[in-house]
Amino acid sequence: MIGGRDSHDDALRVGWDSLKECGISEFSPAGATVDTDASQLRLKVMDRICTIDLSSERMSYEDGEREEVSAYLRILILHYLVGARDKSPSGAMVSFREFEGGALYYSAFKKRTIDVLTGTFGDDADSLRRAGERLGATTLMSGSVSFRVMFFPKLPVDVLFWLGDEEVPSSANILFDETAGKMIATEDLSALAGVLCIRLIKSSSKAEPVGSK
Image (cartoon, rainbow, N blue to C red; front, side, top):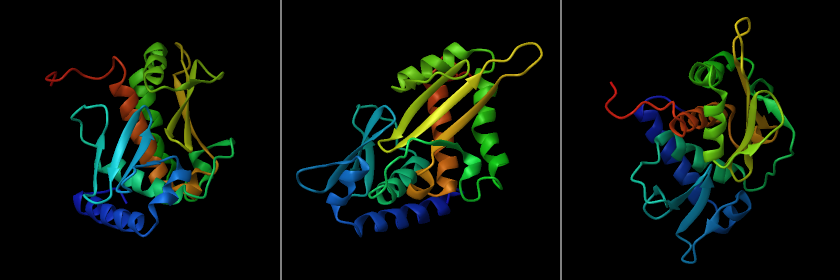
């Protein structure tokens, strides 16, 4: 799904077509709010509200920032809206390895997510904690820092972090509700976790200032 520009365009085209094949009222169970004119949906994505316009096939944030909704995230939103209509989280959180193909692709998943977290926050658990708070995360009682981010209304993601010392390096894990693989594909879960990690970095003091390179 997630490769070059052509693959993004193809995935977006399929995603919009799948969305339009459904009745707009079907997306309320996924946690979306339907506009009165039935041409727009509003969906909470982490700490932000995203407007999805079916007529123009555009997505934008409601907070007034001019940041574009990335192609990765647009694809994930489309897939989630279609896939989560008749699904609900169970409350049981599992590793990426537990999903179809997850064990095979775990190394790539770890490199783009867990290794990014430990590489960025390895000696600064407080920065990670504050980043989670800025995303409206719920604190969990595990590790040095742990919290739950509602990436989508029905798709929670747990971030667990253990601060290392002179002998043991810092480590981390990312868990998903066991039903997440029924809402979106395993490949989407990897991309979703990658988006979350980037957002955590941007929400922390670890983000590089503009013009620093």
